[in-house]
View 1 (spheres, rainbow, N blue to C red):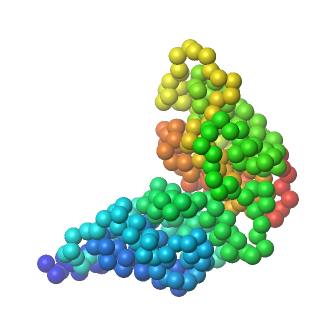
View 2: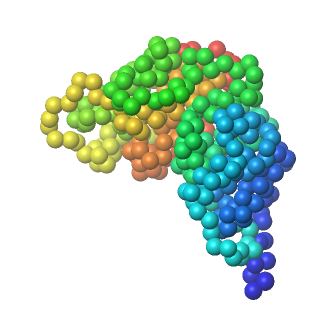
View 3: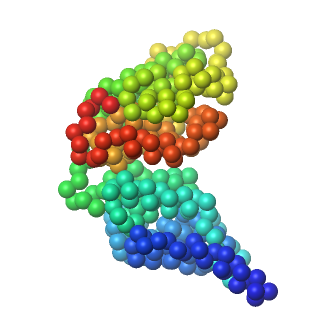
Amino acid sequence: MSWFKDFLKNFGAPEENFGSNFTPRAQEALGLARKESDRLHHNYLGTEHVLLGLIALGQGVAVNVLSGLGLNLENVRTEVEKLAGTGPDENSGAAAPYTPRVKEVLDFARKEAKALHHTYIGTEHLLLGLLREDNGLAAQVLRNFNVDLEQVRVSILKELDPNFTPGDVSLPSVKPNNPFVPVRQWLGRHEGEDFTPRAIETLALARDEAKRLRRHSVGTEHVLLGLIRMEKGVAANVLKNVGLTLEKTRSEVEKLAGIAPDEEVLADIPYTPRTRHVLAMAKGEAITLCHTYIGTESLLLALLRENDGLAAQVFKNFKVDMEQLRKTIYDELKPPGDNAQKNK
């Protein structure tokens, strides 16, 4: 059966051809990730192994940020073993294939490097990629260590540029448990300093859509409807260009969620946990765009990252390529540093 083992090794080998734009440290971190997978007797290479590889590297932007958060290899490795377990002692000799999530992480890393106008992909971009793939085991491990994923993004940007100051768009370290806290109190001391007028109006329209459907909370699907109803700004334009009209999207939302029984709805209905997560991610998207404000484009980018909500299901049902839509948004925006008007 040695021929079969050799075949499996060769089958997995092309994944190691990262390309010249991966830095030596990034390539070494991925090599260490494979060693971690082998050590745990896993027959796959997952996001948790990439996280272990970054920490095992012991140098670079990613490990500096993680070390600054108090993470060490043994504690993270213990947590990974607790969540994923270890495989059987026997080893097939095959090169463990990347999971679909790791492939997505590598794709995200490339996009993060491009968004930062870097011509290379380093450990910092791998870590940013892990943060964007927030359903993987690596993200779960970080959450278990009380690491705020969006705050890590800010720490990476600070590490890359000592003069970087997020200012009014800095992310809160603690999210409130009370879903009725208004967005201005939760995401910033003064809503107008963070959210553009159009973004504020979008959230008001989202609340109106939720009430129209007699819902007792504002979901991601209502935010999507609010963006379409705005009819102005980057988000409204790109949604219109992919054929998401208000009438069609409303119909799809009603088909997926239905209309609640005719009963009284509170005047100040809360955001769902997923919507609150989208609002927090919108701050991270604004930082990535080098914006000192949160516009409708950041809200839409965050919606496109939230893979499990009803808005994501609407996109899928209309066969919208969400990554392509993200690219379209970036193409629509002015280059970082340009004094974009705050009414986007």
